[in-house]
Image (cartoon, rainbow, N blue to C red; front, side):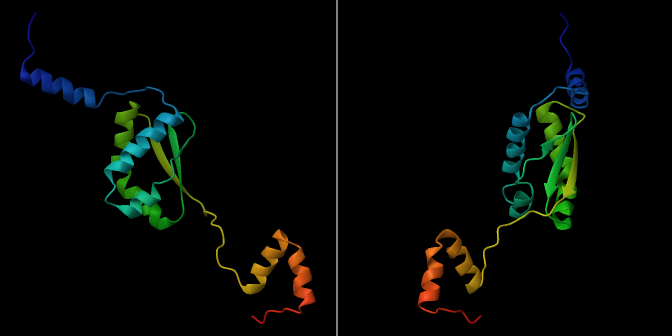
Amino acid sequence: MVEKTIIEEITEIEYSEYENFSDTFTSEQLELKWKEFLDTISDRPNLLATLSRVPELMDGNKLLLKIGNSVQEEEVRLIKPDLVGFLKRELRNSAIELTTSIERIETERTHFNDSEKLQMLIQKNPELMELKQKFNLDFNA
């Protein structure tokens, strides 16, 4: 048996990095590796917030990441080569593609004026309307 020289071993390693892998992966595997990548950028809170949503696994190897605005899109564009390279290596699939989609993320409204608060309370407890009328309560907003 002939031993390999160091140059042959290095050349073999370099070529194996650029092999075309085509392993299939599941959404669960994607989510696990996505979170592993997030651990590597824990010192960048804005980027962490942007990448907090795991992308949807679309057609085969296509990933769709929904983001909130163009600033986040720019952050993703800057980190995309590293992120996609990491996913390709870890999931052993060279055909992975990441696209972004800007979508308005609905947030629950948290500030209400007095009459809106009263209406919400009346919906929960209709007897409050009787009290309001009985004691002639009114709000001047």
